[in-house]
Length: 362
Ligand SMILES: NC(=O)c1ccc[n+]([C@@H]2O[C@H](COP(=O)([O-])OP(=O)(O)OC[C@H]3O[C@@H](n4cnc5c(N)ncnc54)[C@H](O)[C@@H]3O)[C@@H](O)[C@H]2O)c1
Image 1 (tube, rainbow, N blue to C red):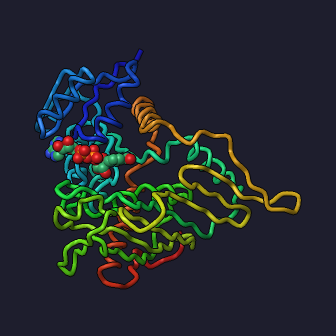
Image 2 (cartoon, rainbow, N blue to C red):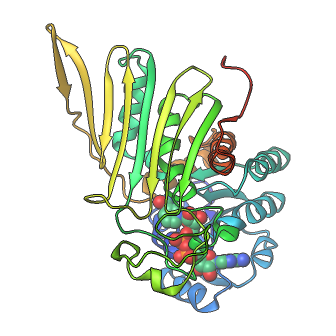
């Protein structure tokens, strides 16, 4: 039997413990839970105690200096993804980094370069690609059943979901932005994944802060939509964004993401329109729209909608390390995603379309 992979988690918050540590603990034949790290010693110790992890660190550089560790998850605030992932690759570890891959295109490109120099694997934790529905949808699309996909739309809109003030999520310096970089990366990524990840060509984005009033210095609107957070002071990220991306294939993608908005309820959606059929995922439910017998027909694939948070994704990464195969969610896709995210914010600032690249050919 192959040697177990020695695993360590950096960032013992909700995602690090609830997703990564929980998922790696599901594969004891392949993985030895070796270390945990958090600048908050209590959180690190709590995670270690809960999962019976022997080595506890409060400094990630000390963890990375331990040559026994083979693979690390990075589940820290977004601003630390690139520095920690690059340091981990330089230290010879395989890296499973949370979404968003980084804070900018430049950081994501530096991560790809570090991965190449190290000869280790770097996978971005995009769990929505790994659900049973997404796996089926990707196969169905790749088999050509939808024909040429010419337009897509996606969104994740929350009625009450703005980050608490004082958390890194609400601080642009640490998060890189609000719902665009937090929720948008999930559904823009899934849409581009289904489309085969064509390069972005142009982006128009509008980011709004009407509910938190960032730019004009007014106090936040006294509204229950901010869940009481309004009273606690200012925020530095948007509350809603919408826009339009044109891809190198000519396919367009319309999007909307919000942490707070006057809508009926939180909703997620993804729709693809092709010449031979369409596909939708509304709140995780997959449906296909086709034609048969001269009539439009709806197809409800018999697939489960969930995979367990991170379970399939983690199993896949372990298999990639074992076999040397390339991860399904590589950092190269993360570079294109960060080009779009950077362009959404730049377009919103300038009020103009941003050209990411000059050509519309793949
Ligand atoms: N894939 C998903 O669906 C999903 C869901 C939630 C969060 N996330 C991502 O996971 C990451 C963490 O989010 P979260 O909700 O767990 O946040 P969190 O605030 O709960 O956890 C972050 C942890 O990182 C620790 N930390 C900060 N600086 C550190 C450092 N220098 N060294 C070690 N630890 C440090 C903090 O003390 C905290 O415990 C984010 O990038 C977020 O986007 C992904």
